[in-house]
Image (cartoon, helix red, strand yellow):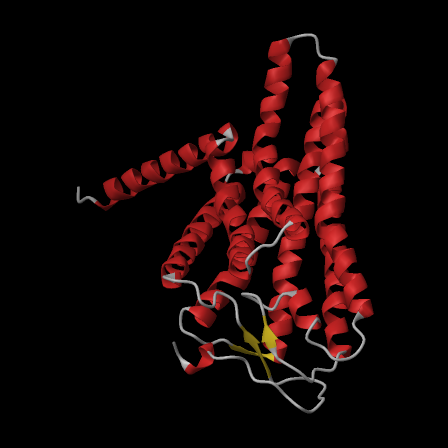
Amino acid sequence: MGSEEKAAPKFNVTFFRPANFYLSGFSNIPHVKYYYVFLCFVYILTVLGNVLLLSVIYLVKTLHTPKYMIVFNLALTDLCESTSLIPKLLDTFLFNRRYIAYEACLSSMFFVLLFASVQSWTLVIMAYDRFIAICFPLRYHSIVTKPAIAAMLLCMWLFLLSVLVFVVGLIDRLFFCGSVEVKSFFCDHAPVYRLACNDTSLNNIMAWILFIIILCFPLILIGLTYVSISIALSRIASAEERLKALKTCTSHLILVAIFFLPIVGTNIAAVTSYIHPNARIINSSLTHTIPALLNPIIYSLKTEEVLNSIRKLCKRNRLSNITTSKKMKPV
């Protein structure tokens, strides 16, 4: 191991801002380089999948609907979250550059938490879309309009931006006098503020508020929408119609399960039993990266509209290539 794998330095003097933090995640894991290679492939496939989905939605006019505005936002957020996390993670651990500048640390914290929060609340807006479609089908097109969805997405971004600016900004009021070792794979909020020497009670309160905003509220709201959807479906006489309505929710339910179940499972396990730090870090890194990979695959393979749009684009490109080649042939 390189010199940077050794214990992080300690300081005997109190100072406002350390020059660097030391990321100690993925330490003492055998054959961990294979995991980094795996994450590299995850990132490449995430970029390809989400860029494909974004391109299809942008190019196919029939997909310029409120529903696909939400899907576009989710794909963009997935792409941004993976880009804010995986390249830096690989640079830090694969090339053993574990020291990160103070400003870069706070920037990384802000963007990773922001995109994770937006991803969570985008799933709530998707649930709202399904709720209106099934519970109020005749009024769907008058309620779920492009301006309404645009306003919801804009308010979500502004609210989460404001909260995260405040949460990360609170780190700046702290003094650090002990270790600068962050026991995580990125500059996560709790592992950073717990290194401070002065009062961190406000940071702790905001950490709980952030947990409620990112995880609890979205889960409760999604749960309530599906309770309402279940009640509405139970009133439909035909079992075939119930199944048809339920099928429109399957993609969203899979996305919700992929995003929330690992986070909820890790938090329950942490409270009820002991989790090895390395197991927690690996699970947390997968929680931040795998949903962004699977989301476009689920929406490409399980949504007939997207599959048909991809086929149309391929057919259109093939025809344009044939036309171009014919024009280029000498008479």
